[in-house]
Length: 358
Image (tube, rainbow, N blue to C red; front, side):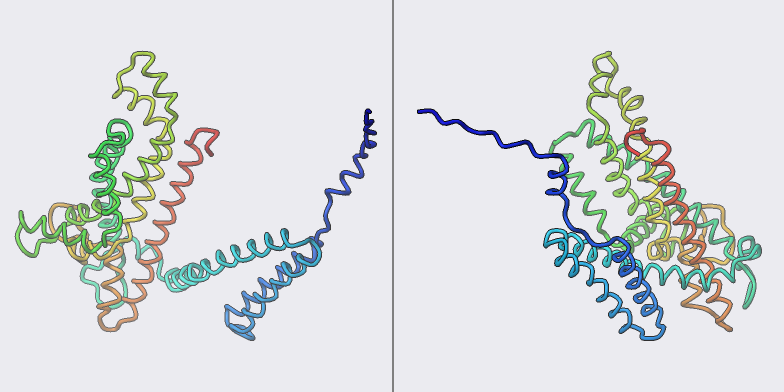
């Protein structure tokens, strides 16, 4: 006995497309709802009309889209829209304090900026006038000193961990100590530098190189971690091809590994500089403060932008208005420097990375 199976007629492409097509919300309607919600939240956050109540009402109005989606598109699409709304809301919530800080610094710092503000120090200045030239010089020199100390130590440590140490016990301990250094408070770095220099120069020592040493303690673990991750991304095939040609390991590292990871290494170093350039506590402990310009890292106190801002707020003098205005101007300049460093890191990463990793 035989059974004959009758093949089903082939489905037309239009029928298949109809079976895969699902109902969806109108794009214009969803965008309109989101736009209205954003406007209401913004108006409420700015304190206009209904204040916080209006902001909450606007945020609740955005949930109309996932509820409507559950009715029209089904549970899966509605869940996707709900999660997207929650993630976007978290991002917007994080932007509120950032925007508030930026607005306050720009509003109070921009009127202070002038040619005099950038070219004069505070030597013999009481009340109005003066500038931050001495603080800019100190910040750049101390940060440069910290970079000179930190980059060779951090880069060589990363090279050892990736190229020589592998999974040895020493590498494990080095990674552990680097992780511990990443989390130490900045004031501890300042106290370490102060205790180190007291041994050689006695109590009450204040000098710029001490601030550079303190910042390097904070900078080294960041450099180690960033360089280590960049060296890990270099394909082993490049190393093996170099070894196959009889090239020594040290020359392979110098000529193959480092040039390949150069963009990421420079980016990591730039971000590490941006991380430490705004530190106040360690510089307040070891570098001190002064109203004069000092170009010598190894002799005398050096002013820096963070310490200048702190001193201007805590000890404004009489009348306090000009000193507080200068503090806002110094804060704005420091913020601009950090933003420029981050921009440089982005540009280096974009233009010098391999084409496929941009």
